Image (cartoon, rainbow, N blue to C red; front, side, top):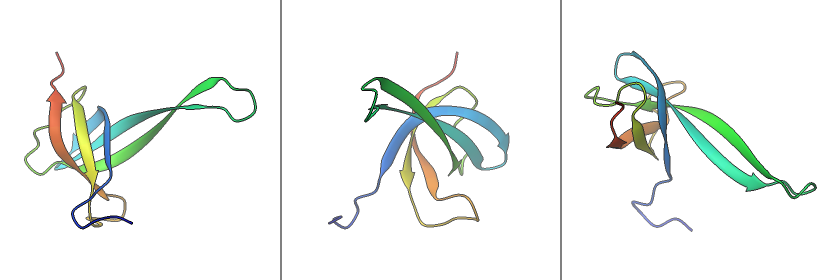
Length: 85
């Protein structure tokens, strides 16, 4: 059971920052295939709220789950880990 204040967090790279106050973050996940026992890399993109427009294309960011902010936005940028060069 989740305790109050516990939210899911993901780390990924910003792949699009063309919208105002929104970035698209690509999160990588590696898991072992159940039948073939090989490691598979899968990716998923999350629209995330970026209120001060701090995150830009290529930045590594931490996003966390939040209440629905629009039709597709359920995540917000928590911190920018590494700026793009």
